[in-house]
Image 1: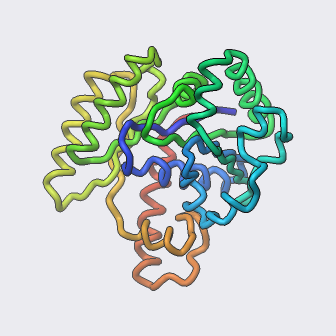
Image 2: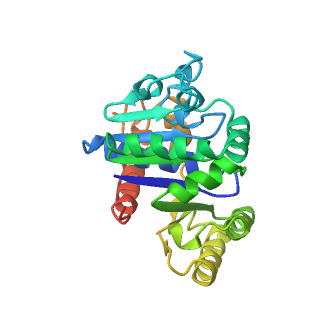
Length: 261
C-alpha cells in the first residue's frame, strides 16, 4: 500500500505516459491500482483512450469528495480491470483552499489513507507547474520517481526540480528513482545528456537510483492515437508496430522490475 508520484518541473518529458504504463503493468498482475490526476487537463485519461470520461459527468471530481458532496466510490473511474482514475477540476482553487484552510490538508490525508485500504498502489500524476496541492501530495508520497528528458531542456527541468524541492522544504531523499526518457543510441545529444544526468544525480540526489534510459520510440504515439496502452491487446496495429510494441513492452517490464516500491 504505497503512494508513488512521478514528477518533474518540465513538461513533455513523459511523466504521464510512464506512470500510466506503470500503473497498468501492476493492474495486469492483479494489483488494485488507483491513479490520482492533479493535472487539470487530466492527460492520464488519454493513455487509456478514455478522454470521453473526463467530461461525461461534472460531479465526480476530487474537489466534490473533499467538499463532502460525493462519496469515495462516486469519483472512481474504471478504465481497465483493476485500474481506476480520479480526475481534478481546478487545482489552482484547490491549492488556494489548502493554503487558506489548514483542515483541507487533513481532509486530503484522510482521503488518501482511506483509499490505501482499498488499493495496493496509488499513483499521483502531476503537471509541471507547482502549487500547494503539489507540495502536499509530494510530502504524502512514499516514493517519488523523477522523470527527466534526455536533452538540454530536460536537464534544466532536473535542476528546476531540485531547486523546487529545496525552496519548499520537500525532502530530496524522497526521490527514490530517476527515470531518464528519450534515449537514442544513434543520437549524440541524448547520450551526452544521460552521462551528465548521472553525474548531476550523484551530486544532488545521491540516494536516488538512476534507472536505464527509456528509448525514444514512435510506437508510443501510434498506440496512444489508437487509445491503447502498451499492456493492452495489440488491436489493429500493423505487423511492424506490433513488433515495436513488443520491444517497448519488454524494455518497460525490465525497468519496472528494477523499481522496488
